[in-house]
Length: 350
Image 1: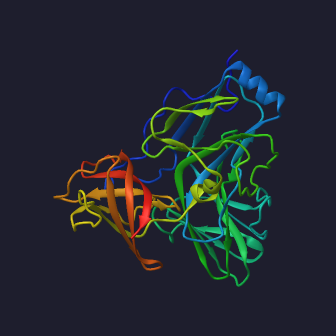
Image 2: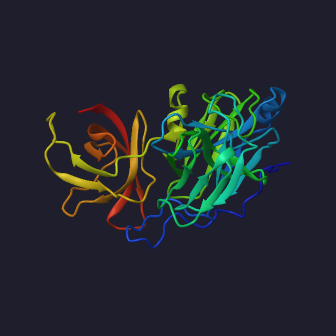
């Protein structure tokens, strides 16, 4: 008999990632429901159970702070031929006296409910208080008011229906502020390695699938014991071993960015502006191999095409200016006619 251990959704949840902002795009919205459906045959379920495999879930974030690591968001050994992962986007911030190290668990840390655009003020003994009047739109800030080093991160309610579980861990130095942006990306893997909820994990112990829910709130997946994950479209990808941490703890894209079209049959790029990164909304990210974010199309720019090559120029105060030759891999809707959520694979630095 088909069953679902994680709460069963009532069909496809309503869209909730786009709002009436001037840019037409809202990177995150508290209260938005999300759902992932996983279908497996009986042989796969029986094999996973016999092998003592658990299903693990991780949530992605973006931050400029170095040293961050993903933590286990949720896990279960109770799954069947139809398993649904349902959750609602709500945010918590936590602080801890523990250090960010592989295997360390942050489940017992001081955790406070918080909204995007607010700041957790951390005092002695890693005790936090939420300041609703200080923060950055689209992100959660954690500020250390002391001269002692702590750790911090975001937490979100578990799909298991339990309380909030940490999804990441970052070092928090004295008198410094960590800015963390939640992303609509979830990584899933079946693994026999025992991993505690809230524990720091630095590698995948099974085939790990990154599901990108940017622009949608529902995803259908399949899993087969030997073939692994299956899906349709381009909203999911298998993470290679060196991509696990950068995919879940990505670095924000520069505050300003421009895209230029590549000259046909030439190695140089004309100054033909195609689009610019929308600043001030968060959600853009950069890894060792990819760049993505919400872009506004230039007034007279040529249309972007998936599979075509472009030049991206990015600028920020921390890194200065960088240039990359990239290939467009996805163009998502923003809810506005003059923009799109664009994804690129890096080809080479210019």
